[in-house]
Length: 324
Image (tube, rainbow, N blue to C red; front, side, top):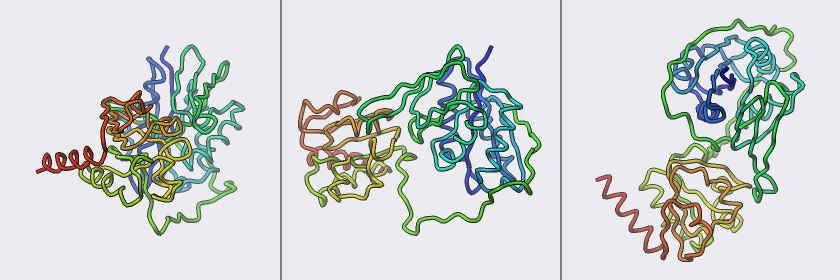
């Protein structure tokens, strides 16, 4: 019998968020016989269901109501619990996002089941789950096993899993909402966005990062130029952000952001575990360091031993020429 895994799709401003496709990808990797059901809550979101059905969902369940037009923990908790009762899944995966932090514990409490939070990987077999998550500031990987619980519940770190990369021919169906808007104890008021904008490295497909080996804040321009030439974003190790060379939002690692871009270029980064846990799931890793014994070479697909101030400008030049 197939393992039924329910994922909560997230969306904003009429578009699905990347975490939705990451959850679809992780659900398929979690079990060899996964039957993945995507739950889509909102109002006027039925057009998004077709996209989920093509990108990983075996089935898409759409629940629409004016009370679901904007996220609220009360309304989402109610409809997620109703969908779980209707579908009886073996496992439920929710993004470790602001919405997920809010609603996942409420759902788990309503079901009286444990919740494995902030997972990077999950494997489901024979009714049990093994989850991997960071511990002790990323110095260790914490393995959590959930047994004799149904459904298994976990939240998955944003950017930790690669999105589903195939095509599916999933079905779409609609469930009537079960909530009574008049009985909700909370309501949506407004969303406020930072005036300065924000950098979301977890969604970047190419990241070029600089570490302590860059030497000085003004020398980061060399790294930034390569990132621009590759159409990517500028990342950094903790040493760089602690020194004030870049804002914290650029930091990758256990105390920063976890990323899994298609290409990750590490320049002057030694490869401390604190940094590695945040980028080791990248699709292709290139490391540039003058120390041949730098730990970063242990996880790199390509390692270049040499002066980054000679190598990086040459790469930038080649990238620009390749683009014509």
